[in-house]
Image (cartoon, rainbow, N blue to C red):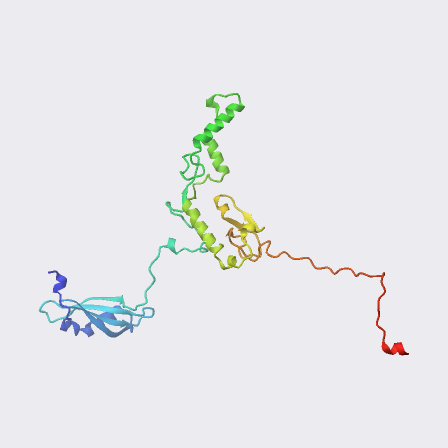
Length: 294
């Protein structure tokens, strides 16, 4: 049988009656006047009782001063064990701590702030620096040897078959191509980073927004849409309409607003027809009866 099952759950009489001792201990560690009424007591074990007192400290609503007292076996004197401030069942508690990287929200970064990225950030992957092989899912993957051989063949045809040792270095050609494509960076967006960015943009300026639902047409047919480069150009562009709520933002091609370039073409002001004078026929004028009998 374990020690927990042998403990008596009935509070020890002498420890339960030591309310004044427990209050004095709580008032000794607390600020003056913040120890309130005796709330309850709990038996912690054989001859061990914890007394709870109301806490009147501002900002600690629902907290309680917990003072544990105990006495030795066959002893008549109750002694103090510990005093501590503990939250009650309805206590006001601080929210659970969240790491700073999870507390960040769009717009929190201000002038002079630095936002370090983790070495294993899933949104990024190693770029091509010219010193190592491109990543497997890179646009340049698998082209190192093919590009070098193609350059050598074209140069040989144009320069009367120069010796192979005079051909340009294939790695240098690939590095130049990577720099031209804007990929010669330490890290570039991974597939995961592209997908998360696309989901975020589509949520803000996508087909499911109330503005797009009420639009007369989508951005794919709007003259204010500025195309972007890369694979995202198949689904997104940049709005250049200063009167649109999405001006300067990346928008989904299925997004739309009332500022569509073809939404309402202003009609020309109607011009009245010129007057027509008929001089070939006689005009009949009614005569007044009084004038006819005069």
